[in-house]
Image (cartoon, rainbow, N blue to C red; front, side):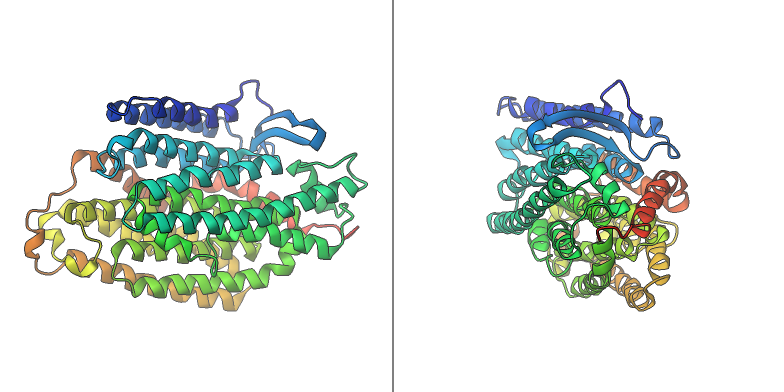
Length: 510
C-alpha cells in the first residue's frame, strides 16, 4: 500500500520540528517551550491515530510505504513502512510522550534548561518512530544509534546526584552494542554484494529477508550465525537481556521519572522490536539455532529481575528491576517462535509500556512529595493520599499481571506459546508470577498501609495535572485488559508473516 501523502515522514518530522522550536525558545520562557513541545507531541499522536484508522490488518504486509534513494552508490534508500507490529509500537510511543511531558512539567530539576529537556524528549521520540518505520537496515542503524545522544543528555543533565556516572554507563554499554551491530550490518552488505540474487550490495530489509526466507543468500551458516549474533548483541543490550542489563537500574533511578519511563517504556522497546523484525527475518536459521540459548537467558532474566526486586529498599530501583523481569518475558515469547508467543510478546511491549509508565510515574509523584526513595521512610500513605494510593495499587496489580488488567493476557499468551515448544522454560518462568505478587504487594503494604508516619501527615493527594497523566494510563490498563482484540487484530497478521518466514526457510545456500 503506497500512499500519496507521506504519513510516516510526517510522523517523525513533527516531533523533530517541535524539538527545534522548543530549543530555540528563550531560556526565560520555559513554559512556552513546554507548551510548544506538548503541542508537537499531540500533533504526532494525531498522525499516529490517523495511521491506525487507515491501516488495513488484512492488507499488504507493509503499508504507508515511502521509498526514495538516499545513498544510491551504497544501495541505501530512504524507505519507510509499517506492519502491525511496528504500528502498535508507534501508537504506544505517540500516546506516552504527551503524558510524559505533562508529568515532568513542574520538575524542579529542569530549571532554566527546560527547553533543552523537552527538545531532547521530542528528539528521542522522533528517532524511535523512525526506527520503528525504517525498512532500510542502514537507515534503521543510524537512528538506532542516534537516539543515544539525546537520551544521554536527558539522564546526565537532569537526573539525581549520580546521574553523570549512570549516563556514561548507559552510553558505553549501548555504544559497544551498536559498534558490534555496525560490523554485522557491513558484513550483511558484503554478503548481499557477493550474492547472485542482487545486482549489487543492498541494505533493503524486504529484499534481504525474502532472499533469506527462500534460502538464496548463498552465505555459509557460520557467517550467518556470526551476523545474527552481531545484531542480537546490540538488541540484547538495548532491551536489556540478562546479563547485559546492569546499566538499566542506575540509569532509571538517576533519571527524572519521565525520562526513566521514556527509556524503559519506549527506547528499550526498539531492542525487542529489532529481535522480531531483524534477527528472525534476516537470519531465520540462526534464530532457530540460538533460540534455546536465548530462551535460557530470558528465563534467567525473568527470575533474576523478580528476585532482585524483592530485595530492594529503593522504590524506584525496585520498579527498574521489575522491568528486567518483564523484558525477559517479551524475549521469551519472541524466541519461542509460536504465533501465540510472538503475539503475546508484541502485546506485552505495549502493555509493559503502559503499566511501567503508570507505576513509575505515580512512584515519582510520591517521591517528589517526600524527597526520599527509601521504602522504609513511608507508611500509611493511603490515609493521607487515598487517590495516590489507589492509583499506585492499580498500577502495581497491572505489573504483577492481575487478570482483568492489560499485562495479564500478554503474559498468558507468552507462557502458552512457550509451553508449546519449551515446557521447562514455561514452567520455570511461571515462578515469576508468584515472585511478582511478593514484590508488588509487599511494596504496597510497606508504603501505603499501616499507621501514618509523622513525616507523611502533610502529604498532598494527586493534583489535577497528575490526574491528567494517570487517568488515561489506568483507563488503558483496564480497557486493554478486558478487550485486547483491537490490538491483537492488528498484530496477528504481522506475527503470522514472521512465523511463516522463519518456518518456511529454504535450504538452498544454507
